[in-house]
Length: 117
Image (cartoon, rainbow, N blue to C red):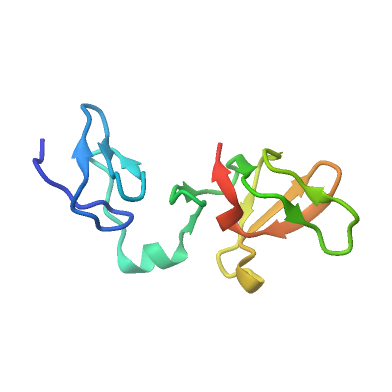
């Protein structure tokens, strides 16, 4: 096993191996030894949650902050679970997740306000 690796997410040199996964104490990213390190182009096209985890189409996420809904009288509360997201890396104003939320309908939200479930 390698004795030292850079974190593929934040390039920190403080990564350590815990017996099954590599861990980064700086950004809390976990990865397997065989995982490919991202290239510059793939870093720009990936969508990450608030904790730096890479999101994919179909993932489930949880809202980590109350979000006001434009034109609505209520807000999306902390802890709301959103299933089957669709990613839009080029979304307007950083709204790079398209989803349907029960009680609100279809909307776009920013990945910085969610965590991967």
